[in-house]
Image 1 (tube, one colour):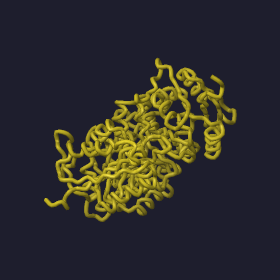
Image 2: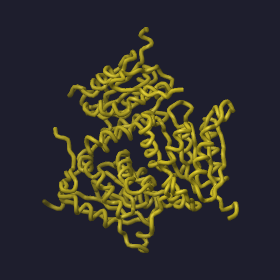
Image 3: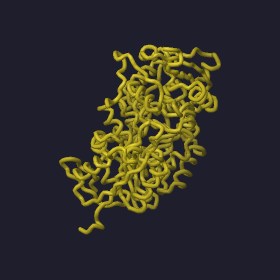
Image 4: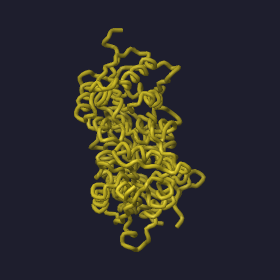
Amino acid sequence: MTEDNRARIGILTVSDRASSGVYEDRGGPAVRAYLEEVLTSPWEGISRTVADDQHAIEAALVDLCDIQECCLVITTGGTGPAPRDVTPEATEAVCRKMMPGFGELMRHVSLAKVPTAILSRQLAGIRGGSLIVNLPGQPKAIAECLDAVFAAVPMCIDLIGGPYLTTDERRIVAFRPKH
Amino acid sequence: MTEDNRARIGILTVSDRASSGVYEDRGGPAVRAYLEEVLTSPWEGISRTVADDQHAIEAALVDLCDIQECCLVITTGGTGPAPRDVTPEATEAVCRKMMPGFGELMRHVSLAKVPTAILSRQLAGIRGGSLIVNLPGQPKAIAECLDAVFAAVPMCIDLIGGPYLTTDERRIVAFRPKH
Amino acid sequence: MTEDNRARIGILTVSDRASSGVYEDRGGPAVRAYLEEVLTSPWEGISRTVADDQHAIEAALVDLCDIQECCLVITTGGTGPAPRDVTPEATEAVCRKMMPGFGELMRHVSLAKVPTAILSRQLAGIRGGSLIVNLPGQPKAIAECLDAVFAAVPMCIDLIGGPYLTTDERRIVAFRPKH
């Protein structure tokens, strides 16, 4: 299999502190570690870090979707109620269609851990051939949220024309209907 | 009771293949069979089939609501993430107010069956005197989703000025508050 | 502590009948009674009653947020599907960002009581330094809905720059992460 067959996955850290270097990014590496553990099909991660600025987030998402041709873009950070938290707004602005089930389910599972899970405004949507999924910034919430939704991600990528992703079934059983 | 007293219910199948005759519509008949089983008050079904085209779906919804005067319009199909799946967008475009609780609950009950339930973007909304509810296209998901929400449908129709619907209580107990 | 340190909380009753005096407001007093029972930090309630008119609701929300400087505004009424129920639309119109987790969770807990909980379109959002939360109009649903979400309210107010709220922990344990 050549490098061209590898699925391209964008990992976008949204954080004023991480982007200015005040603070080491922990969210992006946590997303990458999760994908390394779960995906068994070949893939390549494309990491970016931007400030909590709506235009900068939109530009990074458009680049990852349209130029880098990522089939999946996972963001971490900027989903809360604070004035600088605008990742969901940036995501909605660049998506053609929204996927409300992702945010609903991630909040639902996070609520079993902390009552403040309702403050996370994370959402998901489709831009062209890319699925964009927002995650909170806290590293410990990342695996929890991805575990909740990842079984549906490969079929979603199939439906939008992307590469065939496979997972380590000891970890995540990707669901695809039998025809 | 004259025919004029019958509740009018629109059943809209959204499918490129069913609308072009490539494929027999199974979603629309599944919705009709469900209503025949559950409703005990007189009703008349008005069935339509359209392609997965946003303008065609909007036009069919407007006709069923405004001209056919349906108090309830149930759509089947076009709720997924694929590029041609635009039933939720068409529904939102013709509704004055959205009813987020329907989609949330239908996805929640479907999740007990398949993890890909989060890919269904189905929603519900109100246009004038009509409640529009999106369902997925798979016939087996239709009864499952309607069972989840139907107990609230008669009271919703009451509140928007429609006919008094009654249900077979062995199947669905329509809830109305006691005053 | 001087009066200036008291948190200001808006309580907005939305009801044609209560605003015209046909009917005694029971929702607003139920919200106030809840806050008196739960909050242990000093606060002052600012009550308003308006008709089910979108412009009037928007004007009252803007006044409570921008002029009265309430950190929290709780509305009661106008969340259903009836033509005059427009509180969610007015709320969304004045908010910069929406908090979907509040409505999802309140509907989820109300569903354990009545299947018509899905008809409540209540939502929450942020306008500047104010969190606005919609509740249904029925007095008995008010404590039920606030119990579901209130543990997250103090941290939300912290994140938008408001006063430090504390609660009676026998009733609600406000969650704040340990740093």
